[in-house]
Length: 251
Image (tube, rainbow, N blue to C red; front, side, top):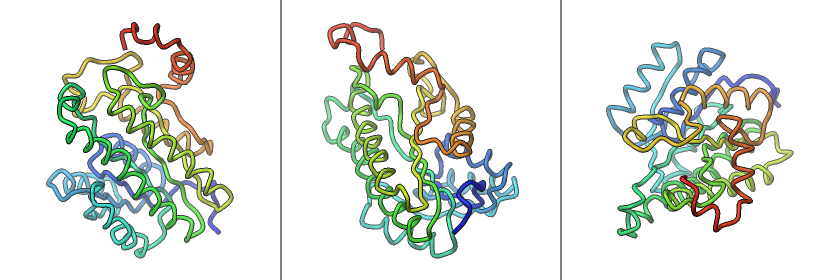
């Protein structure tokens, strides 16, 4: 069995154009990762991301993956694992949605839930089973601080991340002792192209900061990582705030 404490050499990114995922890939390539699979919908952005990683010295490959097509997940991810062991799977896909619009259009709200939760359940189970079959590896799941408590401003997105968060924790418990570990990452507001123009929340962070926290969490064998770390205490307080008070907070 591979040494579980050794740095990863191969990485599979589910959500291959995610800015957080690509920042993490770049950081890990600078350490030891040599093979990177970027899984996502076919697009120039996906191919460009792979080319940029090749320029950093990685053997970067792309594979067609659609979070909203769970029937294909077993086949798609099976092909990747058939090419060789994967040390680290980074589940990084997800959409923010638009709370105001999604409240008025349940179909759009359901798409947020299906992408962030249903798709992740399918992909997470498939990846976890594949890692267990090879006897080692880590699954890193990008959750969100929004998963901790529903906010009026983003409860559709937050509820989908809450489901994902609980699922990932349970999957980690199910895989305990198999050589596979699951790490849940809960960033606060991340400044990316996708959040440009949105009101910036307190404790905002960057893709690079999240990538640094992911690497550190892997080395420490953490089960949960908050970015920034101070959010752990902030959310512990907010989680227990009386509901009447919580409604009045500018969150």
